Length: 84
Image (cartoon, rainbow, N blue to C red; front, side, top):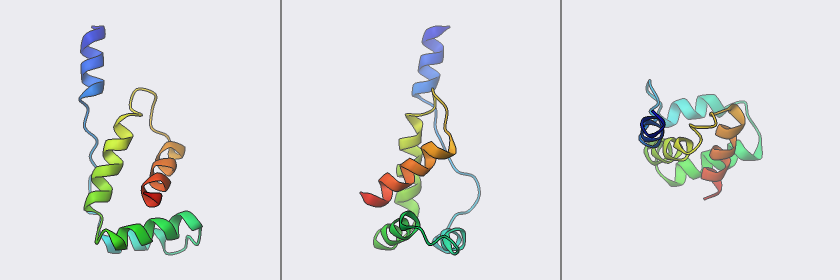
């Protein structure tokens, strides 16, 4: 059982349901004047969209599945992505 659990955790895939576009991200960040929000938006503009962002965030969050993904974990990953 332990090996199966380890295998499933290592091979889990994170996906985001629903359409998320650059316009939608701007809507979410519209009233957020934080440095993190501005940095993320700038990074997405430089990357010309959200496709790479979604893949990268999902991949980074995968490492956190065993311990759980919290709002703080996601916030940290967004900041790391924006600063990369």
